[in-house]
Amino acid sequence: MASEAIVELAKRRGFFFGSNGAYGGTAGFYTFGPQGAALKKNVEDAWRDRFTIREGNREIEAPTIMPEPVFEASGHLDTFDDMLVECPECGESHRADHLVEAVTDIEDAEALPGSDVEALIADNDVTCPSCGTALAGVTVEDFNLMFATDIGPGDAQPGYLRPETAQGIFVEFPRLKEYARGNLPFGITQIGPAYRNEISPRGGLLRLREFTQAELEQFIDPEDDEPPLDRVRDVSVRLYPAAEQQADDGDYVETTVGEAVDDGTIGSPWVGYYLGVAKEWYDRIGVDLDRFRFRQHLAGERAHYASDCWDAESEVDGDWIEIAGFSYRADYDLSKHGAHGDDSFTVFKRYDEPKSVERATVDPDMSVLGPEFGGDAAAVAEALETLAERDPDAFDGESVSVDVAGETHAVDTDVANFSVETVTENGEHLTPHVVEPSFGVGRTVQTLLAHGYSEDEVDGEARTYLSLEPEVAPQDAAVFPLVTNDERLTDLADRVAADLREAGLAVAYDDSGSIGRRYRRQDEIGTPFCVTVDRDGIEGDGPETVTVRERDSAAQVRVPADELAAELAALRAGGEFDVLVDRYETVATDVETN
Image (cartoon, rainbow, N blue to C red; front, side, top):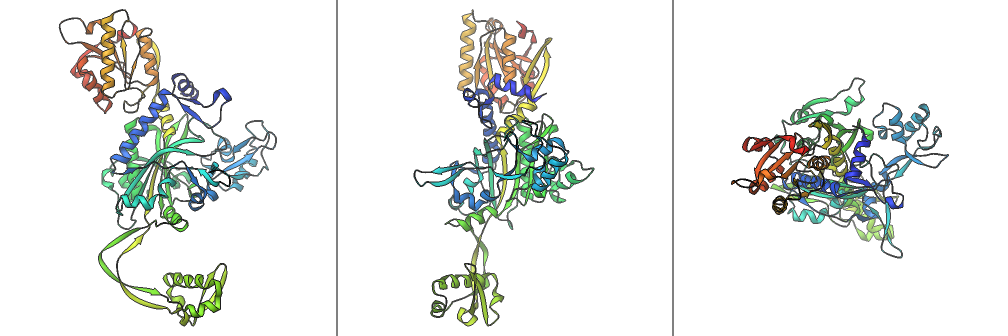
């Protein structure tokens, strides 16, 4: 299945299309049509059910614009870059690593230094995709991906559109920990838009300038908190570790989550736990697991905050694309915001029993420091206190040196008044570590479309259909009166559609064209069940019945109209259509051509 087929179907059936077409379009921005918006929302709801509700986490919604100091602290201003190469002839900009990947066997050129990418461009005679000009010798530059803006009028405060939803969680940690009553572990989730000024957006929903993330930040005590690994210990996973990627004969490792954690293939039990949870969730929403893997980041590829990272990847149109990332971020984020912000990014960990500990302290004689250091005296005293906590042995000599504003100051040890005292402590302030599963919602949507796209024949007629799980399909059912010139049929069809909607199901109503064509329209948008109201269902002395057709198999059964809503709700919740086949009367499929 070529990507062109998905793009054409997506436009024609209202899944997604390029934005601002009336004004020439804007690269990297897509509008979700009625079917796509419904599919996307259902994916988000399924994610929320699994990673928020079932995990006992809490969800927030933070602003999408944040002030510059947030990103100075997080490191995004310095390190959130892609490799850019600009054509000297036409001026078009391109992702240098993508150009290299297109002409070599290298899968992750972004993990390489810029100088290596420049050499590969020259060695492989890479040319500009737009005009064909040779790019050998052109400098590969770092391009920061964040969108800048101003907050307020006049001398406005600089700000940025968030490049990830995570920072909105981290900066609010001082208040969020209060809601958790200071108890670890606890998790905060968020689903919302993020923005990256991509150099060369491409691939439909795969690389956008505005996209939706679903992220979980799990805050843990690294010494005491362990995940419930037994829940997913036996989940089978296909892993592509860094060592296998770098080996000449490297291959996948087919194993279980428990085995991979036990033998160290997955370094963090927390990351292993969420790989298992994610694998089961992707299976639940309809990702083809034969086209799915977890790939470990190479050392040069990891984000600046991650000590280890694995990606969930799906195969789409012959390429492996990242659809989620699982990072052990340690205490990087909270430590950075603690150092730059004006609040506490720690939690108080109470000991089971009070502990007697030795604590090094200083009590500097300010009557000496003041005349000697003038305006720097207070800073010198603070530096002495910090040094006493960090390196008590520094006070063993007759004098001790501290750095203040780039200048070294020597202080007599007796002036510092250094001492070691025994104190009783009831606990300590701990900076939590963070485990982050981060999901790309749009990429998941495109994966579901690609993996669900199917072609076959029904009654000798070719058809295209999307095999989407009922939980995520844009519509739950479609209702068809077989003909429109019989008021009894249209009345029953109207009542059936109303009952289904009252039960919370998304229902389409279609009375236009042959019944076969109506089925084909619903097949193409992935509607799992079509309900046909025909004369056989209203004649006779028994209860009114309707015909229910299952999308993938085209099998049909006749179901009492007053039981239909409950049956379809059960199917949407994960029930099997075969149960209906066993319970009710089957119907020949030739109704499709009537």
